[in-house]
Image (cartoon, rainbow, N blue to C red; front, side, top):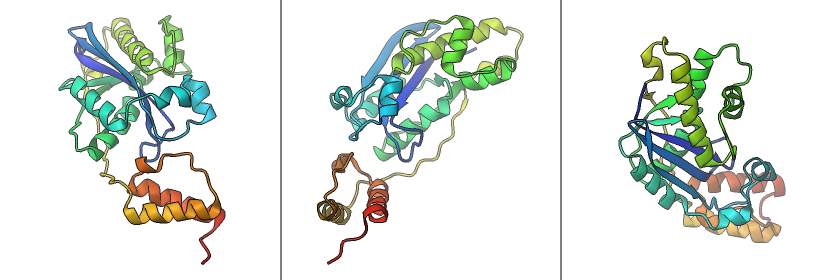
Length: 237
């Protein structure tokens, strides 16, 4: 098993790293099997949080409004992680969101990781439900605030430890970090031309945006413009 790692969990505004944003980061630094530090912060995603995500996480627009900007939070997380591997439940999901932001902010974040979901699939084929909450219930692991980042990171850490204890005869490489691969292309901010046209569309159609215009990337602005045109039509001069 691995005794030193960063247990990581994110809450996000959706499931797509390309289109959605980080809402909360929770990270636990484990060195030689002992918790040494934790890092947890809310982020201001620059958009309204859907009712479904608010219900799932308990994070409201008002709470997120006081959060850090993505550049600051991701830079702090990258520094916090250092050279340690990551651990989490479906860790590639969390890694992909961080990696996308790291690329945009010119930060290096190449990592190996331990995925407790993959471990559970290999070791617990007869357990029907393998969500983090379901597996914590299966093993009696305390999870006080499910779907909050630091709590879920701690839960994944405890699940990993439990799986190691429960399956001592399993090949040790099963519990070792594997390279995490997610290719992210840098997305620059929207262009002045996009911003001008988007402003014209908003005024013309009398639309209230659910996202802060200054947080949009070039790709996000393009998708938003296309969506407005397909829904409301072009500007007729």
